[in-house]
Length: 386
Image 1 (spheres, rainbow, N blue to C red):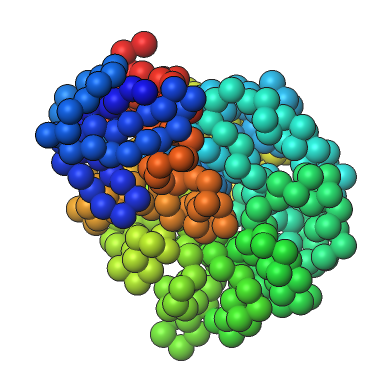
Image 2 (cartoon, rainbow, N blue to C red):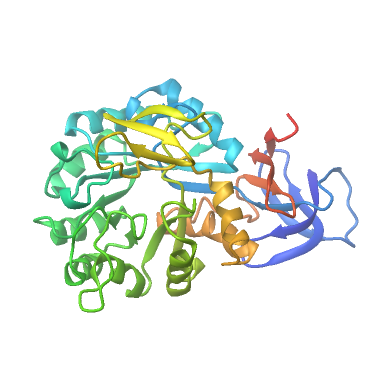
């Protein structure tokens, strides 16, 4: 047994000041112990730093020069290692639109490699598309857009060996409600996005089982006082989660505040939507088949639309941004990047919290919310000093 000493611990249901966190020899969390407890064993002292659960990025396309759409086992390994620099200990490799066959092949590759990656753990697969609307295509290729099809989804899920955890659809596509009902009943999260849907169309899918709005505000019909649209549905429908990209470019901080105030941190999922240029220098990149230019903190399509094409955001930066914008407390920001994404993808029994018996995946932050170290299974795998 070893013990982590630090100034603050963000536990599952409470925040504790100075004490010790047990880490078993086989890499699991033990108990939190107060400072006056007598300790016998190795003590790893983080002084004034804070201990938080490892972050979970449930919507990420790439990082470190690699893209999920590359369909490359070595790329998955490289991404899993790069994510340790972002405080991410679990993630859902996220596709963009592609052919049915290409997406099936990617599912097979990820399923084969899931237990092989040595960095951040692959917790499932997230499909962003292809059941979208051209008007809000964003950085997606409309030539692959289809109406929701349960049989096609089942082919993908078979190729993924059951790893497919979330799929985004546009509620106005033909068959969206029936698809939502069928897929949600299997435990897979149906999310809503890249859509021109009316409020009524979005609400119909929510009543059929959809439980998340994909990158709220972006790629969806806006709020109007007579037609609330997708944004109005995301803000007003209770008990439904909403993703939020907090890089300061996708969503104005005051718009982020409106969403968080409406949803609460329990239902606001911080995501990066990061593409391959994450952790890389500015320049030309690809997002799937589409050329992208990265400059001035954004990734944008090279075409005439100059649409935002994912981000280069790190999840540890997102939690720091929210605190620096004075929108939430550190505990709430951490919740929105750990417990809430785990809950939103029906994976809360395994990820997103410091609890006895769980794999000891955690991060060390300083008092300014800067990442200091990342641990997987009780072992330090990244440190800013290295």
